[in-house]
Image (tube, rainbow, N blue to C red; front, side, top):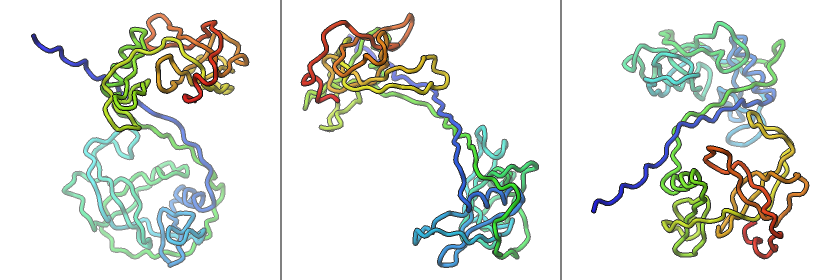
Amino acid sequence: MTAASPPEVLRAPLVVEFPFTRSLGPVQSAFLTGLRERVVLGVKTADGKVMVPPAEYDPVTAEEIRELVEVGATGTVTTWAWNGSPRPGQPLGTPFAWVLVRLDGADTAILHALDAPGPEAVRTGMRVRIRWAGERTGAITDIACFEPHDAEATEQATPHDGQFADAVTGIVAAARLDYTYSPGRSQTAYINALADRRTVGERCPSCHKVYVPPRGACPTCGVATTDRVEVGPAGTVTTYCIVNIKAKNLDIEVPYVYAHIALDGAGLALHGRIGGIPYDQVRMGLRVEPVWTEGGRHPDHYRPTGEPDADYDAYKELI
């Protein structure tokens, strides 16, 4: 007989993306506003070193630092790495070098892109200068990139009051992470079982706790969990919260209830939305069962089974 081949482990592209909004203190406000005006500002620490980009607190003493200085738009590459395949949203659309540049007058280096024809044109110690963006808004992208520049260092740090008209006081930065996610052997089996409207966990051979969703190993005993156990489908609400803020792209009317549900036979609770009952009637101990939509690969929500509530002692260890 030929042994059956193991099921293929699932993989899927995943994108995590959101706008990150933050307000700026006086130091960061002056730095970004300065970039808009083609001025690079640093901050002087207690021991006289100039930090660019500036920090609001001394990394050695943790004291607040506010003494701003202007540094040059030229500098020296301290280290670099070649990026042969630029990703969307990076500073340049053609291959470039990531470089750390110590600007003239600064004691620390700033990370940015260097426009160069190839890695053979980049070296530690080379001189570069800022290429300013044509349109500047008060962001790090006001520095379009660095470019090679042969002039010797002449700039020194000079005091600056950090005052500009129409200062930038806040920024919105787009954060995005693209990667391929694989749930692994255990959760692949769990997801495939959900497609068949079954919930399958794995039991630890040492402590006998059944993990749902399975993790592949028991975090308490540190041993592999290979014994698969079907649990549920019904379960008990152990605790819950009422959601009053509507999530973007989620077609669920608020308020609604999101709960921890301990499926019968499981050793810990999983997350699920409660439906089929007014939100203010959901309670700890409520017995629920999954509701599947046509073609759905996981329960859409859980609804009351009509059974009497579970006794607190039956689920208190799963809260």
